[in-house]
Image (cartoon, rainbow, N blue to C red; front, top):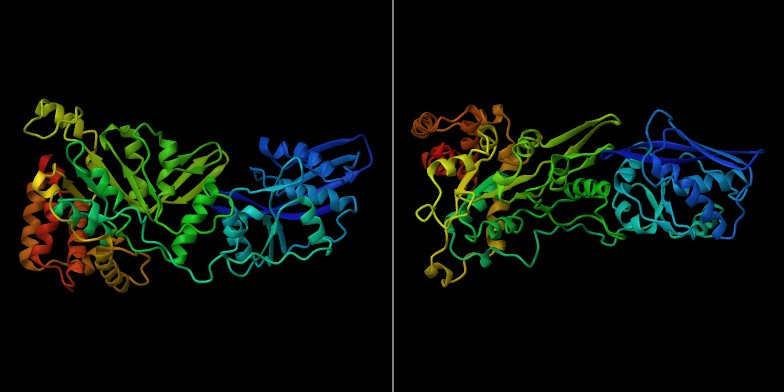
Length: 505
């Protein structure tokens, strides 16, 4: 007999239909899987056979052929275990109701018949809604994740028996509902706050500008000056996630397998801090079957690269595309996958490779310091809007009272971002840092006095056209924080001050 079960496969962060066709025919006992399965899919036959037997059902001693259609697309992962098992039970008459095309089934089987969570359930739920599929059967550990997508009934399954009884109409399993009826994103970890940072008033001002306009930031200073502390508190002044942003982040994390069982949406902006020995595939994404890297896992959050010059130059240069386009395209023999990567880059570097306490006390020669910082190429520095020197904090400031809390600064950031949203509505850009060249000319036109100042800065610093536009974008953000409709000379002047490495080059 022949049975057909609808499932789905995820490539990149996009899902597509896979139909599991099972034929059980007389002949010598065998189990063949066709349709370009990878090793994890071929191993499903052993899990399926053991699961069916261990729940007390008979496994057919006949010739079993499983076809995963379309056959030209490579199938990866363990999510086809449950569809295969249901197909075999349907072909042998144990599953009495034929599964129709409005039901998608996912799940990995344990040897005792339990259904284990799988990766990529949220992209599948989004795919079901686009295709008009009304029901999605998933492991109970993935149900909370999938239920955030409205318009699809998500049925949580704990065991193979649960699936059989539900599909045969012997048991009613209510659809999973999200744990919270009203969405509320978090503005960052409650354990961190800007009041923890003593002194560094200039640095905290730059951090506020970076948060308000979505600008990339590079901090240069001695070890222990507070660069990492500042970077970790950037998330506390970023606006809370909206529902659409949370779904985008959760889709990437679901594909990467970073969501724990029973976890719903990611509610905080990601903060990723890979080690400087990470590879290009680890940072950008890659693998035989493309998977997201740290740049995509930091989507709509912060990517912090400490000891930035210690990263491989080739790895650093691979960041140029996502910094410009907000996405990563990984091409492999299995196909090309696109991952979102609209993150804020925050880099930190010492004055020199030895990590001397200050420039005055540095034992390195000017040539050694220049060689160390020259590992950061000019095209990469052009894409970093704010260059900031973070000096060691004097004792008097360490003993002084705390500054503004993150909630106060975040209120100003949110106000500035609302101005940007109204200005850029319908353009696809959300923050000043993502404005196109045409938008820069339209919204960032400086008055004559500011234009003369900018001309002088471009001439003396040798700025590229990209660096010129970056200064105007930062000036626009500074004006937004001040509630000004037009850019003034003081806004451009402050923006130029954040091009420290251009002055050193």
